[in-house]
Length: 349
View 1 (cartoon, rainbow, N blue to C red):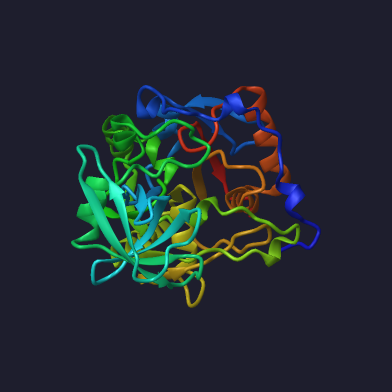
View 2: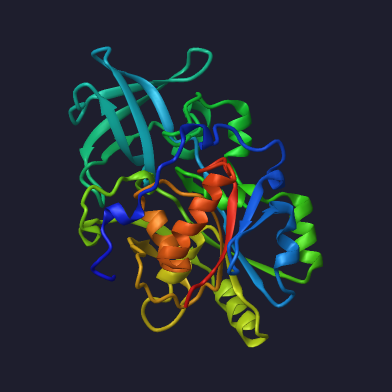
């Protein structure tokens, strides 16, 4: 990473009214800032098929957001909130716990559901890849219990309580494998009609899985960007996707990543001896100077100031270009973050 970049180089002023609190009426009705050429072009997301070539490959993240937020109380009566980060074998989960006083190992926390039901979980202690997480044991299969007792884990900048509409719209049409605690938000713009138009264009599609963790919202606290450490996330790149990428390359097509999570999975899988299939953990941190080996074009939403995802976009499109595109989006009143609008970017080098 070039040494002259500090955290302040990834800052910008965002009016609060541009933070989208609700999705567009229709998924593909959002706006699309085409940032590939010398001059930004304001488009509608429904135009995306015309911006793809028949030989291109669209790669998506098929992770499914779980209802990972639990609200309840400790045995003492004190309020407690849990955000499940990962489901483990043996009915155990790793989670972030917020309480006035951390619960002790062996204690019970009870989470509420509509209708008066309560989910009681045993606190096993701290553990996992990050020591700020707690291990809990549920009385039954965690995914099913989270569906009954949990809330949609809307990001902190969305200020309303989750609703039935959020349960549908904070989930992509590609969602198949449960495990994410945040949506791969670039995928939220796609609907069946748009996918039909992309297929009619002759564009192939493949998938990866990266279960997005709460670390996606973890702030960068040091002005020295290199000091930041990413939370690890589980991902899998199937052999069929590796083969599809090889085929796209052979016919002269581009690999178009839908979202930064898809990009992180693909580039993580290509770090050693070329792109390889398989499942593993990644804590890849992509900053300016990164050597991209797989992705040629990126569909992505607008990201928070001073965030690791803004650094990724800067690495991919170029630092000055990133700032110019964000300045254009601010002037043109684009909607920002998870429920906001999108950009289409080409790799700078």
